[in-house]
Length: 54
Image (cartoon, rainbow, N blue to C red; front, side, top):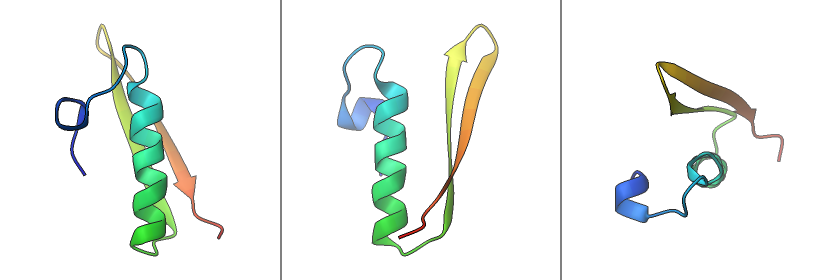
């Protein structure tokens, strides 16, 4: 689905862009679970598991 360079994003909105892309992919491929992860610099990262309940 492309990354930040391919799709573009405002500064500081990478997490939102990644999460919304994941939600759309879960719906499109009729999957129940997905994971989004992002590097936040300094050797740190954040991740979230999303459940499609629709």
